Length: 460
Image 1 (tube, helix red, strand yellow):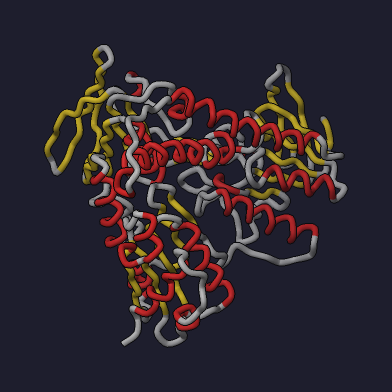
Image 2 (cartoon, rainbow, N blue to C red; image 1 turned 90 degrees about the horizontal axis):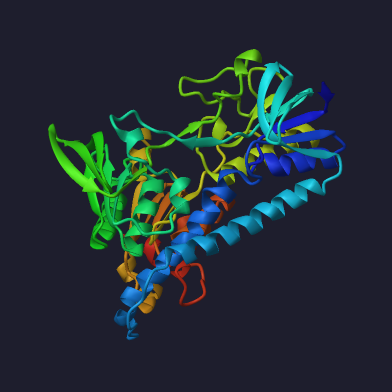
């Protein structure tokens, strides 16, 4: 059995920087990865999807160029070329990350699948064949999550797509049926609609984005419907059947069943933690009822010396949260700090067009908590920069404490929504109150300048 000081399982957005830091701190470290360095973000998530979304935005701009006085005499979408561009971007990031790992002294990169054989030892089935047994006093699990496939009659027989496999299409689907109106489903739905697909989205809830405020969700719904995307809420696929190239879905809505014909099915019904093959029962590490690894606020499991980071543990599944997990664990273990996950900010951005940037409390959450709050709203059609660039879709919304004047949360649905949200996050981090932002001098004309007007709406 090969002995290490530390073993990191999973080369994701926490695993890679943590393994490098451990090695540089003098710990003999192994980084075990069953697939590609970079994890979901680089290989199947943020990097490839945002590259393709850029292509979809170019198609949208071609269609709407006449609105700003530019005539585009026809355009075509070459999905094969879009895929090739995306693959180059992914490969550059993946190989760059792998090269940095391989150059790190004291760090062994092992390609294979690890499973525990004891509380501080694993066996690795090597991708190139054979097995290795490794042990260490410190273990860090960063195996992430994978698409969850619901149990639906006939689904496995129709050749469904996931958020991973859809990235490899080289021809635009004629009619894409999407199971799930979550962030993944909406981003892919809008993207392929702009590429030329007919798109139908099935959402089980009464409306899209049930965790977001209703006014924000309704605004985004109107935007997507204006792009001829069909959105069916209170809808569930009950069965699938395929004849030739045609797939027929039996969809239940409001107690009645209807048939929908399509050519492709994308399953975007959530993600599940990749813990099944880790044999964590050999360690005594506790899982929750959904298979996530339970951790305390310092990301340690119930077994001393075993930590879980990123999407494999409960909580928000975002790349930036995974990376922050790494910084918490490393600084606590090797820099004498005592950081926790308690009360850390959880910003996120859904990259529909326009973007939805979110930070802090929503109005729905503030109401549920029974706190005193006020709401500031500003339609993007009243934002000077939006008017000038010809894109007034969306709205700005902020939740504030009327007594302390602190900003409690914000939702920015608009062009560069994530960037505008980040301005408000920095204000929240620094304790800058909304009345100071109201009179702050921003460069004109920028999107953030309209935060003046957003908070002016609170004046009586």
